[in-house]
Image 1 (cartoon, rainbow, N blue to C red):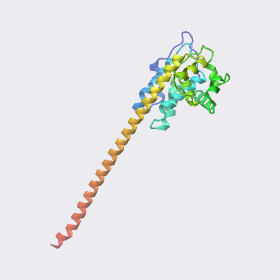
Image 2 (image 1 turned 90 degrees about the vertical axis):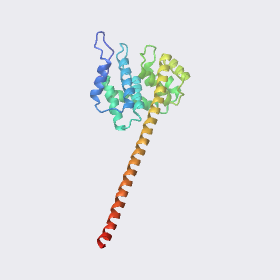
Image 3 (image 1 turned 180 degrees about the vertical axis):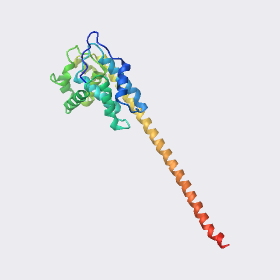
Image 4 (image 1 turned 60 degrees about the vertical axis):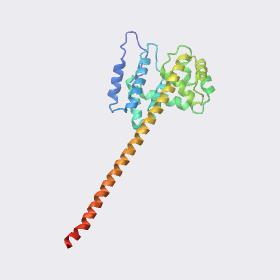
Length: 238
């Protein structure tokens, strides 16, 4: 499927419900409840970005979107399902899955070994596409900057956001808002994983107790059978 173009005047705009429906048609397996809500939120927010009249796909958007899915699904219990869900969501958003994933890989590779200065001062860098003051920011593009900050070892805080927003001609308030959301989601995911681990430990203890009880009953039955077997000859002799 081709990349989503800029919206033409009078063009049909896909609804959020249709995008979610499309995702559900592409990925039919049940989703672990803890992940369902944030996954839906990511799909819906990205949908709203993609249907903006002035929005157009670019590699920075693709990097931020794929990195967001990878971040969200990094701890998914069935690891082999993570990329399937990601690709189903990207396809449901009417984006070219292969190109979006490839753009993410290109920028990720480009970031290796780079310093903060390399990223902010490189006019020929992949990130240069967002400069100029006319770029339509989105959560994916704002989070792309946050992920890049982490990738080059910069502190993810208000001062860094201001520095990057000024250098890249982005609205600082929008980047800051999504940085805070990222931090909140990171905390929620960590709390969710602690809950999952606690449930796993509890389930293992329950299974161990059940096995121990089963073993005790089996031993008791064996003891009873041995006792009955020992008493049988004595009764016959009498």
